Every structure is written in structure tokens, then in C-alpha cells.
Amino acid sequence: MVDQSAAATGMTAPVIPRPRIARLVNLPVWIWLVVIVLLPNALLIGCSLMRISNGFIAFDPSLVNYQRLWGSSGFWTLLGRTLKLSLVASGIAALVAYPLAFFVGRIVRRNKALIVTLVLVPLWISLLMRVFAWRLILGQSGLLNSFLVSSGVLDRPSEAFLYTSASVILVFTYIAIPYIFIATLNAFEKLPQSLLEASEDSGASSLQTFLHVVWPLTRRSLAIGVSLAFLITVGDFVTPSMIGGIDGTTIGVLISSQFGMANNWPYGAAVAIVLMLCCGAIVGLVMAACPQRGVLLGDEGARPASGAPSARGRWLKIGGMTGVFAVILFLYAPIALMAFFSFNDSKMQLFPLAGLSLRWYFDLVHNDGLIVAAQRSLIVAFFVITFSTIVGTAFALLLHYGRVSGARFCEFAIALPIAMPGVVLGIVMVLGTEMLRIPSGLVRTVVGQSSFVLPVTMMLVLARLRRLDPSLLEASLDLGADKLRSFLFVLLPLIRGAVASGALLGLTLSADDVMVTLFLAGPSQTLPIWVFNQMRFGFTPTVNAVFTLLAVACLLIVVAASRIGGRLGRPVAQNDA
Image (cartoon, rainbow, N blue to C red):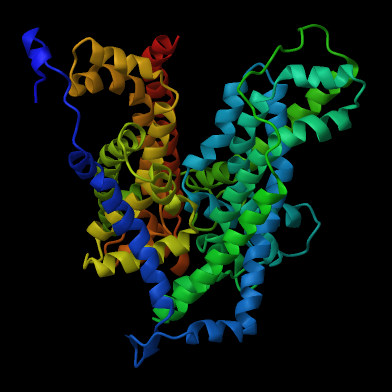
């Protein structure tokens, strides 16, 4: 309605949205939260209370599955092995990534952005590719055995490097290092130099400065990184099935088999519930062991004056750069080796190469199964990215500007699939899509992948919105622009970098996903599922060519993301200034 006094002056008062309209606008957030997050998890709990009778689920609530688990020594052995492998790998990765983040964040000045990019790029490259590359190194005819035999250390190739618990820990560590590095790097960059100088001026040694200044301010970030690495590896059933063998079998393989060949969904759901409870308890203990002491405000303080470094400083820098190169070599050597073998003229992955050839790349053109799977992956990725980018951005705007009741809870709950073990998220989405009568195939795959791609876009946009100056949008409204014009010409230019980054990151997540898609795709295999089945049931050198092309595509996406982010970020930086 128009206020009478305002009408007398020829101006209209701003229309205040009615509470009922505001609730209707916020309704999509709660619909997504209930249908995609809460209800499927409730179904998982309910399914775990059922039992199997004559091959069908009997709706007879009981604790029979949990009683079976309680009395199964094999289950507890498998659970203990799973948690141990992930914890040991996360711990080793922390010992590597934490000092690496300290060196890059506090000491490196030149080429810092390049080093950070090199450490993080493997996160964009297919997990299947990285795991498969380790098979080429650790296998009986792999690089390690070839080197040891040719150098005379071994008389014949050994079987001790692959299909062991140690090989699983090695690959889990390889996967975890970039996650812990990026989680702790920001804390070191924000560490005020003035605190370190004050500690030294007070007579504290380097060890005392670390224990009483650096560690209390960075341990929470380390705990977050270790928790993230633990959750990613504990739900990974791809690596154990390809690298671990019998000694490296984890509970993720058991859960996937219960929803597959065994067809005992209630028992598999009970195993998943126990795994989630154990993971939650461990993450809680890790976070409690690293409480927050102090707040990093982002002021790095004054840097030491440049000058001739001391002898100790020179040796420290030389040792640090050696460690950086060693970590980068560790991250890229498996990928480079697999790309190298993609040009091998022989079917055998042996050194020396039989000759250089492009035959495996030409074979891809005539592989109908691969082409169809690649087309499905592109279709799925298109719909996932389109939907997740639009809806994820809308959810971020609603949670930040709208009056969503329980906004913090909604934000946490919508992001929950990101923190769930992959195998658990897969079966949760199976139960949810079954309840909604969504047939297995492309539609179900799009819904399942959107459950973890949409929160990524939402959180990136939310983080950007919270750094904006609210007076910019208020000024646009005060100058007479309506909400649509203010969004298009003021707000969107400020957040489009985050939106584009979320879309590109979502593209890599969709194109690489195996653990969720494997449960949802059915006979409509995407490219990662096609490759995974090829590696499970027999090796073909075309896999090397496929992975090399995927790696090149991922690198191009990284370059595009950095350039788009830089270009779109220029007006943002200018406006912020």
C-alpha cells in the first residue's frame, strides 16, 4: 500500500514484504533440506532397523542388525582397520603438510602462488587416475619392481608392494596432503609477525615461540584439515579395492557389497550408521584436542626487513625448498608416469618402453562404450552444474539476506553431504531417490551429484557475500533502483567470481565422482564408472590414454578458473578498495 503522506509528496513508500510471503520465498531452502538431506538420512536409520526375509526388506523394526554387528568379531576387526588406515594416513599427511604450509606461508616470498597452485592442482585431477597411477608404480611389473630388479637389489619382482595395508596408507597419505596443506596455509598467512617478534624479544627460543604462539593459533586449522582428510579417506572404497587387496579391505567395501551383490540393505545401513557414529566421535576428539586459542584477524603484521640472511636462515630456506620440491615430485610423479605409459606401443607396462605410439589414443575413437559413457558424463555434468549454480547461488542469497528461520542450522545441514563419507552418501542418496520413485540412470545421478555440488557453490558464494560491504547494496536501493536492478548491476558483479569458481569446481567434482554415482547410475555408466569397471575386470592400455586426456582437461579448467577468477575479481577488488 502507498502511505498517504508519501503520496502527497508524489513518492511511494518501500513495500515491506509480508511474513507469509517471506516464508514462501524461503520455502525452497527447507524443501531441499528436508527432501535431499534430512529425509534420506532418516530413511537410512529406519532401514537399519529392518531385516531381510526371502530376499526382500521386511518391515519389522528391531535391533537385529546391530546385535549381529555387536557379536561379529570380523566387523570390529574391519572397522578398526578402516579407522586405523585413515588415521595413520591423515597423521602422516599432517607431518608433511603442516611444515610445508608453514614454510610456504611464512618464508616463501617469490613464486608463492605457483607453489600453492602446484600443491592444489592434484585435487582437480581424477581420483581414479591418481589411484591407478600408483598401481603402475607398486605393481609386480611396475616402476618400483623394475628399478629394484634392474639395479640388482631383487632377483625377481616382489608382490609385497601392492595389495597391502601399507600401500593403502601410502595412497591415502597422497590423497590427504593437499587438503591439510590448504587448511593450514591460511592460518600461517594470517599469523601476525609482530607476535613472533615480541616472543623473540622476550627471550623465547624458537621452540618456545612455536609452542606458545604459533601452535595455539594454528592447531585448530590443522585439526580441520586432518578431520577433512580423515572423512574423505574413511569412506573411500575405490582405493582399497584397487590397491589394498584382502589385507587392505576397508568397511567401505563391505557397505558397497551389502547394497550390491549381497543385497542386504538393512545390514549395510546398520554398518553405515556405526561408521558415521565412529567418524563423528573421532572428529569430535580431534577438534577437542586442538581448541582455539586466540583469533587470527588477518593482519600479518610487519615482515622482517629484507637483507642478507644468516647462515642458519640460508640452510633453513634450502631445506624448505628441498622439501617443497620433494612433495611436488611425490604428488606429480604417479600422474606423469601414467601419461608417459599412454604413449607406450606395448600392452605391458614395463620399462624400457617398447616404442612411442599414439595407438591407444586412436583406439579411443573406435571404443563405442567409452564414447557413450563420456557423452553421459557431459550430460550429467551440464545439468548438475546448471542446477547447482543457479539454486546454490539462490540459497546463499536467501540465507544471507532473507529471514530464514534457523539460517545457521540450514547452512550446516545443507553442507552435511560434503562431510559425509562417500560410501555413506551414496547409499543415503539411493534410499532417498528410491523413496521419490526416481529411476536409476541419468536423473538419479544428477540428483545424487547435486547433493554435494550444490553446497560447494552455496558456501563459496556465502563466503563472498559475508566479505562484502553492505552499504553498497543499501546505496543502490536508496538511489531508487529496485531489487532486481540492484542484484544485476551491483551484487552480481561482486559475487560472479565466486559463482564461476563454484561452477568450475563443481564440474570437476561431477566429472570425477565414482563413490556416489556407482550406486545411482545403474546401467547408464558415466565415464568414471566405465573406467572403474575396466580396471576392476581387466587392464587395457586405453585407460592410460583416457586418464591423460582427463588430466589435460582438468588442468585447462584450473587455468580457466584462475583467469576467470582474476578477471572477474578486478572490479570486486576495486569496489572493495
